[in-house]
Image 1 (cartoon, helix red, strand yellow):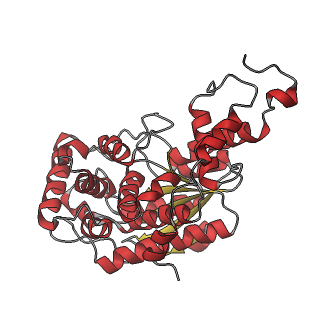
Image 2: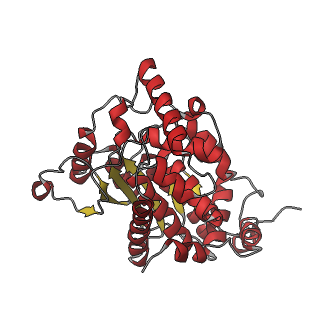
Image 3: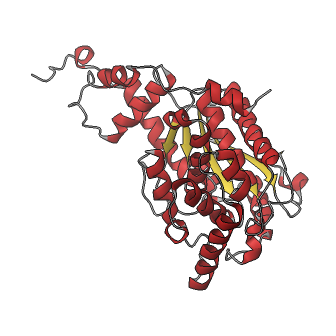
Length: 354
């Protein structure tokens, strides 16, 4: 049985000296030391995490979906019905994450963690939907907790189980994705709660709300924090009070990957909020986290700074779904191939540095 306590106990920092040994190997390759820049840093971190020459051959992107009661506050440019409709799109293979996953050779796991509206036509769609529903969306966090603590625990454990099943099946990189109308509001509240930042500094325009909509979002985040008073030292408390079911599932993916020493590619702002919760529960999980990109959402930079992570891409993305993580797979695979396939000065008969 997967429990949060067992996950926490299984997560540890890489072995002392592992990163130094990996960098030493990179420095024997036919190039000036450090000349491949952050690609070398990426290879070093991957090797240190896994304790072996790294490889990325079977990446899996987890795109978790759920609705949010706070959407009733007018915080999104789109209605809640879009969550279910986008799940159907994922299952048909027509969303951006599907296209980018096909391009990088990743499998997409789509899971319903609490979609409020019916997901129709599954027999005709043909995609495999994983069912992990914890309710018909969260409660409105501006009026009380988004979910119970028991639901928060269940979401994390379900996400960890899915990650570990994939790893048992050969996954060597797991990535986070999300879908849920209203979830950037929840992510803003989590980020403000954990980092102590002001609501207006971590709240962006999400799906593209106008100025009035942005002010409603900021007000909703402020009210949620004031009503619930989440304990920033207790990740479960933060998740339960101002989080989302799909965010809890992603916390589980992060903890599950870290427990198995498998790299976890974080997507954007929602994933960053999940990582803040995960790092509160098990601080050492950050060693397994790779920030695929910097989201255009302002709160994402705050989350990454808190986690001590520097993004590998900065393309102005703000879609979610796992799109940035899918792009990162190419970089991770390139880093592992450099590590494994480049000739050394000795094997190539090339004179090394004087």
